[in-house]
Image (cartoon, rainbow, N blue to C red; front, side, top):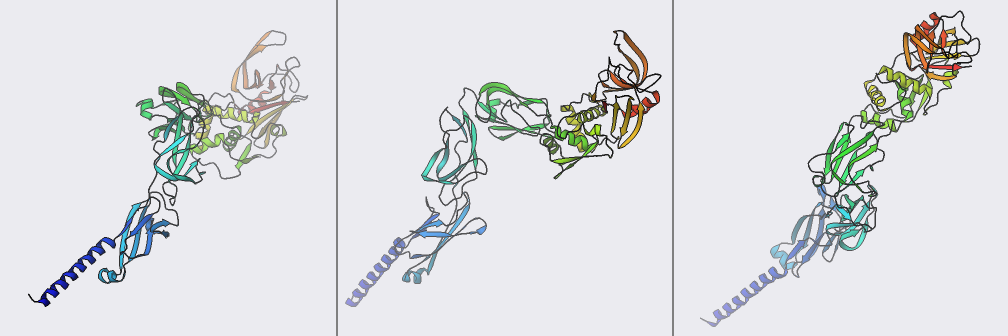
Length: 531
């Protein structure tokens, strides 16, 4: 082999080595990586021959651009990213001269990942007396917020941490907690942390507090320190009296009873019987006691709403108009309004309303007009007419509202002047129907002054009692009787004259007048005795 050939071989070998060295150098020193970062959104790492970062962009939900800050290869969002959001990062790297000729001017790296989400490790916590409430997360967080719903304020932590003390609290309670793993993240959706006092058995927090007030449409919420199954077994609590509605599990530790229809009866006491005894307390965690039964009192309907509905259904001499939107024609809305009545105004329905009748009316307060209207309503709906708006009255009253039922008879009123000449006046729906002389009680058995609703209404009967001298009387066949105060009644009686005190407390009328008055005085009609 000649010298020239040897030289060529050597040169070729050198060139080959240089090429291999170049390839190796490119392979070793031109790498570029894009990966997630423990603090930033992502990190770009460039080796000496990789070139320079030309462009970096990020996109969130629905392709929305996320502005970035680039420092030392770290890509940090300039706006907050939602926890759990899927983020795509795209970077463009410009290669150096010779490499750009050989491999292309630019190189692109892409990364898609989900922004981290912190979860509460245990949302059900038992706290020793006097100890602070501590919230534990499944990974370190850099920012938190806690408080009541809608009142959470973000605060940054000194450094990432898994546990957060929210300080001393009541023995039992709950709080909304949100957190962010990265400083550039929005807070996660708030989660509830509930804590319980220590006890030898499962603790149940009842809301509303046992022994307190429960509104008709209110839900009953029972939250347990252990799972519902562990605390109660497979059976559900029962309500007494039986109430329409249903129990359902909100989560593994919480049972809620949701009433339906008109809810729990107004003016009742409702009991919840548990399948097993547990340590029961209210939302504050005080007065812990072992029991299998808890109770609440449901308030009676308000006088204001009672009068509104009686007026709307035609039982009062007044009409009522709401000042705002009328109560919705649903059972739950009507039950809620029974306790918390809407605003409005009353107006007398008829012209020429007697001043005696007007003097008996006070809006939003119990009065004789209201009592008489309740008695009339009770009588018409087969309820004992005692004038008291109890649970049975409210149930039927609200049902009639939804059914659109109305009392269509005119409003009637009777007033009697005790001064001589004694007169009875029958007024109905704005008109005087009748004025008749009548007899009230003698001085030793006077007819009591005042206003009273008729409580018994019979066409004929026997009237008996004791005379002022102590002797007894028994008068059968008395017609057109309307009892209004004890043994006092409007009725017919055979007398030679009328207009002076002659009875034993009743209001005696000539038969024709009594027969005319009687149809106007059903149970609940008001009778006023005045001088």
